[in-house]
Image 1 (tube, helix red, strand yellow):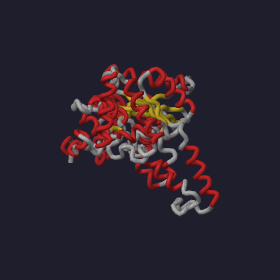
Image 2: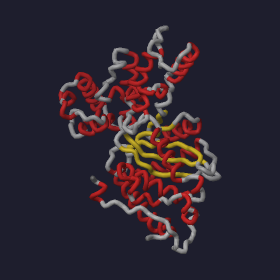
Image 3: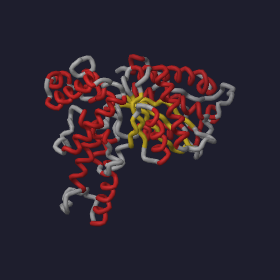
Image 4: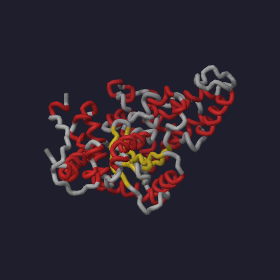
Amino acid sequence: MPSPQQASTSILSALNKDALTCVNDAISNNRHLSIIIDEWKNCRGVPVINIILANPSSCIFYKSYEPGANRETGEYLASVIKGVIEEVQATHGQGKIVAIVTDQGSNFVRARRVISNEETILSINCGAHTPNLLAEVIAITEGNSSTLSDVVEEFEKLRGIFEQNGDNSDIPKNATNISEIKKCQTIFKNRTDIQKLTKIHYLANFLDPRYRGQKFVEDEEKLLMTLSELEDYAKNIGVIPTEEAKEELGRQISSYRRKEGIFGNSMLLHRVPHLYWDNLLSFQSASILATVGVRILSIPWSSAGAERSFSIQGNVHTKNRNRLLEATVEQIMRIKWNNQQRYPKKLKKAVTSLVIEPHQQEDVASDSESDGNSDMEIAEPYSESELDT
């Protein structure tokens, strides 16, 4: 049986190496990803920044930082994000990162603005803050598979509830008095101004083959705004360098709206919208619009992935494990997160259960030497065949 010292050094290191391989494989296997970044305080009250790489079909724990003496200003957060972008793109190629998704904290907004001014990377507000007023919408907004295009759909559903010209029959049941109803309506109005529900949300909804902008295509002003955003974005990423390419994009948009040609082939539809466009990249009659679509629809609509990482991290770095080093916490997080993605049903018995019971942890928590006489029990790992069943 391995000693606590072995568990906290060589075994942990080997598992972390395997987890890093899984992370790199996952990044390579996704055409585009977005950075989700958020902060919390650990059991010692120390600020921690977690970084997740995600799209609607993947959610990857990438890194965890303790800012230390650095102030958590927008400029500092921007430098952290730039470092991640450079690391990912140095290994996996330019264009892998398409957006940064955060909550609306002023430091995160500032960081996103700094990055988006320097890169062809979109700045996205977390879209889950208003719709989570309704329990029915939480599952959509906070799931890893939610897409940026869902924002317009869910906000329009809520608009039907909160803006009914005095008919409050559909207001949630727990809003039992007029003051609560008015408060909900005020919050909704404040959250749906143009700064929160942006052009990029409408563009994502338009490019989602499930929706095709059906909630707003009859509104000429919104449709023109969306098409203008599409043209600007296509120019920024370099897919319409000439007037001929711009005209071809226009033809592809028309065919897409009418479901003509390749856009009307139901065999190419995919339940994950960005993979629909991924399928169309190889078709010349759709390639320009597909290049835009696969990037835009690879953006998750909320920062819920980072919130979930804090829940797992809170179970790793507890009051009874408060002496764990920052690097140790990050390694255990990477192992647990990535094994949970691969083997969710078997996680408890998997080898990552080597995180020792609290009353047995002091030696490991401090990463100190051990005499090897501990009676610590470590769960036996599953074999590959067991994990796959």
